[in-house]
Image (cartoon, rainbow, N blue to C red; front, side, top):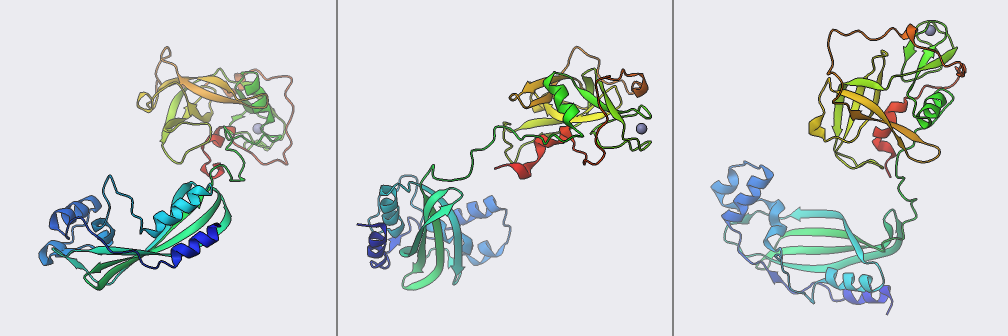
Length: 340
Ligand SMILES: [Zn+2]
């Protein structure tokens, strides 16, 4: 029997037999629900009513539900499981309330299969959308209706590419020197050849004097936490949440963003001394990361940044193309828009 044949057969059964709620509508359950949702409307208690949105609660089947031969969703699920569409995700639920339920009323529910469409290509994989309709009754009176749709899909059939293990920064002519440096375990800071000013993130021209003659210096690799965030959500490829992103004050006089590794979020604080380390991803990419450096002094508020002009210039560095837009190498790991 094809999926379509099985679906037609289940549809023709119409509504399932009524399934009666385990308990009548009762104030104990209503109070728990109101408390969980923070609903303080006094009318429910005063008038002996139940919130319409908890209609489905009354006919939930408990922790150990028995199989129900008449349940159309269970029947379609069995057909699609058999065909390999074994995973499920709920996609839509639309409820319509015809009236309030009152304490003491005994509810029953009946369900029917509305439609099954597919197979569809989805981001999760090939699958079928299954829509059922459930109606709740008190006696013969319908009190609420719900259209419920799930996607039953075949795992492993999504054609989206595998998630990258790390978000890769885009190296431009402006930032290539920075990433070439990290590959050699060097932390490079852009320096204007015209006026000696250091800057980070790197850019195509000096905002101080306008010169496009840009070189770089090697930073010492130390700094202090100027600020930080603990990233909990959304997930970021290559990171396990929560993780810490620090904005580091370098003694050279610039600030850099990067991940703090090897420490728990509770270990970091503003002013904490940190030291750069390098995480080699592959031949093309090495990311600078930061580690707490308990051997160093915490930040002394009276200390002055070093004079950028005193830093040695790398004679091998070339002026950069001013036509390229600046990119912040330190900012890349937090872009949630890039997640798969
Ligand atoms: Zn300059």
